[in-house]
Length: 143
Image: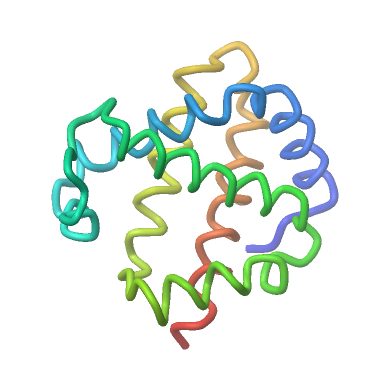
């Protein structure tokens, strides 16, 4: 499933509206992931505090959303734009790529809750396709 030019335009416009709150989006998505999918905590067992709203969770949420912001910038070539992140997750952190889909779903839920007036059906479809493409690009080095 590839992104159309219209999808890309919708994602860019939506991100322009919500990116001012990217740290809050990241914190919400990370908190949601470790709560709803507790198996993901294994990747963060070295953190001093895994509680939702903790500094560790919020800081990592900020990093994750910075990656999403990078993906928006390189939306025309995600595989190249996210290559460093893909290599880092595959070779250094050894994250199961199934977790990318989980986190992308949590990001989708977070933005839908935080920006209900901006999260139209058209935005939902385009942003979901975009996050799926991001997840696939991050999985690139696992092949």
